[in-house]
Length: 409
Figure 1 (cartoon, rainbow, N blue to C red):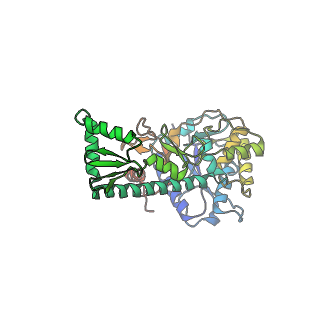
Figure 2 (figure 1 turned 120 degrees about the horizontal axis):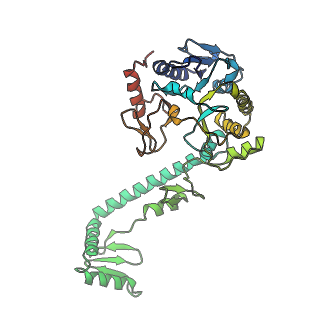
Figure 3 (figure 1 turned 120 degrees about the vertical axis):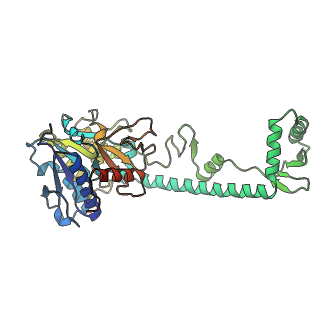
């Protein structure tokens, strides 16, 4: 039986696009949940109406941007609710309930507060939380790599065209056949090997062709260049970028064993240690995702500290205005870093850029190329909410419509 004291809470204010996203999430929740729903907002900032019966209107500092105002309200959420009433579950506006088991999140019993694990570890999140330049550096590396790959593709195309025009491809085929049938071509291969090794020979003959040892090109019987070796892809990219290829992970690295194109650092860890002495270890600690959290009266002290730390970074140039970096700081401050997180089926992150993400068409999703399938109760549509070209959104929209969710209001 559903507990009427269970309440979902959203916090949104500002632009029309964010409120439209919220209104879609509210319609999904109405179909799949029997719990109460409250939206906390600063209506003076809103560009369009919020379609919810229960709204708590809180005026925020006019000096705040809409984003700062939303973060302010989110981290001070406990101040605007009757925490003696029961359990509350905060939801980001891009989280959609897609199962009638969504209310089961309230069966979770965190000791202080409950979050789900994030999609990435803290060292991967760090460049998105602080102004260290590591995110921008990774994007530059990515552009550098793409330019090198494009240049090699052009070089390879020119080489293929030259080879075809001068019948170098014919020689390629002859060499391949000779190597495949060495016994039949023993004389030609032996002569070529001897002449290539002899310092007195300027060329090495192979049938009606010759290898120019000085210029390192193949010539036909007329002496015309018809074929020349091309630098390998990996050698060319390494020379062009200065990166090192790591075959075990199929990526390019720059002075480390990490992918040069993936932002990753420990600058967030360093800021946290500097601000309150908490040393987060290992660097790849699995931090929590701020998109959903379960809270009650026992969560007040945690939420107050999180709020204070978060608003303190609004004017700190070292930090980006995010609440998840300060969340990690708060978790470690309260010694909760090893606590069990809420089941990810309640905050299954659909990250457009996450390799291995897919769906099976039967309500199941995967993050590991179908090595495992999960049927979540709520999905966190990250990055591309409403992207009509994304198959995941196409599925969610069709599924929602089949359950009576409107996308046109």
